[in-house]
Amino acid sequence: MKQATNAQPHGIPAGTGALFFIQIFATLGFAVLYSTLVLYATKRLGFSEGQANAMMGVFGAFNYGLHLFGGYLGGRYLSNRNLFVLGMVLQVAGCWVLSGQSAEGLYWGLAMFLTGSGLNVTCINMMLTQRFSPEDNRRESAFLWNYAGMNLGFFIGFTGAGYFQLGEHYQALFLFATVGNACAIVISLLRWKILADIDTPLLHVGKRQFFGRMLIGLAVLVVLVPLIRLLLTHADFTGSFVITLGAVIFLLLCLTTLRHRPRAEQRRMAAYLILALGSLVFWMLYQLAPMGLMLFVEHNINLTVYGIQVAPQWVQNINTLVIVFGGPLLALAFRNLRERGWRIDIPLQFASSLFCIGLGMLVLPLGIMLAGADGIVAFKWIVASYLLQSIGELLISPIGYAMIGKLAPARYQGIMMGCWMMVTGVASVLAGYVSGWMPDNAGSSAALTNPGYSHVFSLLGWGSAAVGVVMLFLIPLLRKLILQNETHA
Image (cartoon, rainbow, N blue to C red):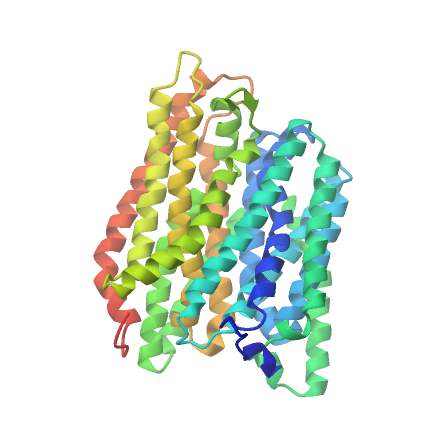
């Protein structure tokens, strides 16, 4: 087990490279569903836009909300390595069931897929973060590289989804996702020993208790699938439940922070809570991409570019390309700027991300204002919006994962990693509600729906900028909390 901590000749901890490639294929199936679910539900299964947006909100809520439970279940019952592979098996089964193209298959397929993806994402992040000591500055670069791998998986998934979407070949699309996810399982099995957990509570129990916990973990997986299938059919109730649960967990974490000692760790946990709360606004806007923003792209954007018909899912590849190429470049740029004395740290990056995504929303009303008589908005405006959103994502998402190793005490790392990802789940439900504010495209035209879209995008953009200003004012406090007892950033 200790071999996982040894550095390879080129200085990268063993297992880091394998996790990069695993991340690519593990993400592919999620990319397909993330970009296609609303279009599939409305075009093939006859759901209304409101029903599809609500389902997409719950899809995101479970996918991200279960990350909290995944951190606990992986660290204490099944091991992160075992839970990741079992989760991928459920994702493969879910995509296979979805290929049947029925409403009942949709619910069962999503239930299996969400159980898998919701639980195993925290596991891969924990497997990566365990390969670095708390003071190892390579962690941030490793997460940026891994985030680039995840977005390469998104690129492959979005590209395939768009290709099959143009012909509405949904069965082939879901089989494509099935094969992609199966590749992640194969790579995991080939690198099984080197991906072993390094320091989790499960490793400190006796053999008998170990197997007992494993059985409990397996039972949880069996129960979760029908439970999620039931909740998917009651999207409104489930959305309210997720928001309430998120608020309760946040309050419990606040109480845990107040009682925690030593003081230096308590202060860093407090900084984590402030940053998590601020990030909720960013993720709410970001999660509009597969919901209201996807429908805006399909109905109100000119998708014929240089004579080529662009699938709605391909637009999201703007985001993936920025992340894939920008992630490693950003890691290099941060290192160079810090060596020159620039103070680029977590609080500044979080505040900047809010301004970026706010601008990403505000360029859309400008594009609407300059649209032609038919109301169709030029493609360049959605490109500009996604570029700004993607820069904001680079500033907050991989940095957010990496900060867990810096701010979370060792015994709370799994839970705080899951809680950080649950923020995105709550934001997904909120994004579903915001999408409900947008105009209904059924039986309407771009010229008629543009004013409604412009109003919502303006509210969201200025609201994000306002929260960004608040975060700027909090930077001195956050730096004091984070850097307590440290001599440098």
